[in-house]
Length: 556
Image (tube, rainbow, N blue to C red; front, side, top):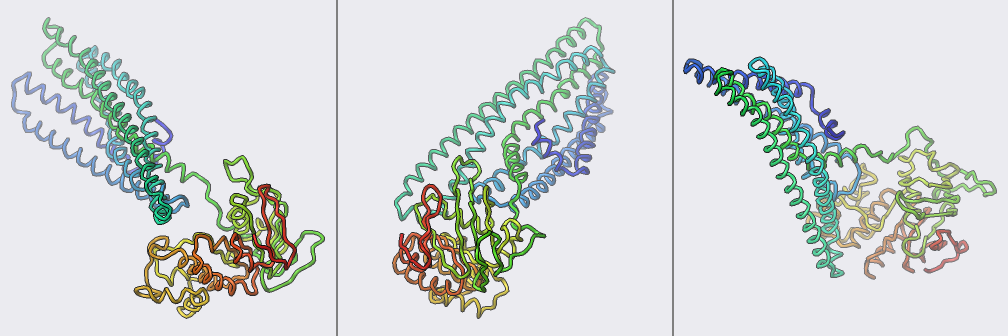
């Protein structure tokens, strides 16, 4: 049994495990009793046990129903718990959707088929062997020797089945993630006439998934053939000698009937276990991925117990002039480097920069030189691999990130709008803001006009990611959030990217008002946004900054 299967079994409540085990033992006892009753009726031509035989059949049916109902409840409980844990974990939505829906639903055959068969595969052969040993020890010995053949052959075929099923699930996982990304970026794909290409990509992925599915089914059918063949040969090894001994009179008819009736019952649970194991292979593969997600370390959003940031303190770097201002923090990047996991090249290397309180600094340079990485480092989303980032005299890694992030406003290139009202989206940084404050922030961001034109104004519920709004409208709502938060530090990540000239002009007017009396770090390409900065820092492919003199404005 693989570690994933053992871990799944640990999720089953002990009471449920006890119920399934008790039902398996009861089923095994009823099988033996049923064989004895049938033997008495046939060998002795006695119809007296018929009512008892009917009662045994009814009890077996009731036990089967109980096992299935209990296993179904266990499956629902385990899937609900895993879904809740997965949804609490951060991660890409596309692949996570496939995992929490189709992936976890594939666990049903494991809990409703494999789990009950596991208990039956332990209890039934054991009790049947005991009864066979009492009736005819020679037949019991043959059954004992041939029984291990079924799990051995099942395991050999199961290894290949598991490999193919993992490949099939990996392809399905990629399809789900890619399809989600395509839907999210469909307007952009249509604007650039790339929908046909993405359709071809999805067709290729679907074709690959079909091939993987057919390969897994082919091996699964082969496993059924192998198990049936081994079981049939094993039963024949018992039935042929029993028939010969019955003909020469060395074996009683009642004993022969008991052996012939019970021998197939000894192999049946193991055959069912192998078949249901193969049926649950997809669910086990999905569970393996779910456990990888749950076992991955969570990024710490805050560092409790560390010193909160206090604006206006003096940096510790020697030789710096003490700076005290109410316009924002004093930020110093000291030889900062960061390399993303799995990347051979550093995204940022040897980066030095000082941002004084109230100063507006722009980062410029070609794509891929690390501008957005610098913002993520300042947000505390990433920790430097080398060097340090000093805020008001303290290393950012020594600060409590919750108050630090509350002291800044971040306007990303693609702001995320939630499936909530316009007012609630603006209140993201200040949930306790009043309606008047929300409206004032929207007016400052030049968003009040189009918001009032919506069907129910500020109460209009947006689609996920702001479906129904243009890129410029989404950016203005993000700026309204920043206005409402009124933080001393402002971070802008190319807010005018992908906007037309009219939208850019309206946005720049809002940004100009937002930058007043604040410290700001902006990632910018367009000259109009660079013109709002006091200083422009050019990043080069070598990742070192070349800074323009203070108060000299440069256009990239």
